[in-house]
Image (cartoon, rainbow, N blue to C red; front, side):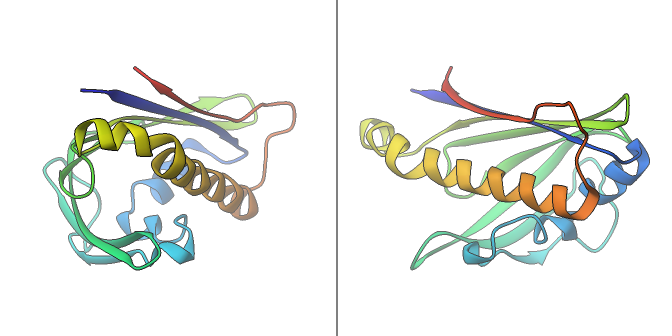
Length: 165
């Protein structure tokens, strides 16, 4: 079993409350997901985020490939962090932690995703060619979109790292 981890950090010149209000609203996930992915929420985004919330959506990770994805919000510390875990979808494991903390001139947003691919050895072979590249595209789009919406913090370095764990 090969486990992978994605870490992303972005600085935004907004308040912690503004960051939380935007990021904890499940409807905003469609705003920061690349349009080519055909992201569409089916249910579960009709109220503010809470522990135990189930969100169902359709996503097209690759052209002509559509899948239903069901996540559960398993942990919430209002204003600071939340965790979503896949209950049904394309991964064997998906555990996504979202952290928001105040820093000089704004907030630091950090995402840590631990994930495992299905299909054993075949999944491991496909990771660098398909999954890793797709995740990088998604998070680069997200970084660009958030910077367009909220601005950037001068002198701070954003990062995106993917690695085997």
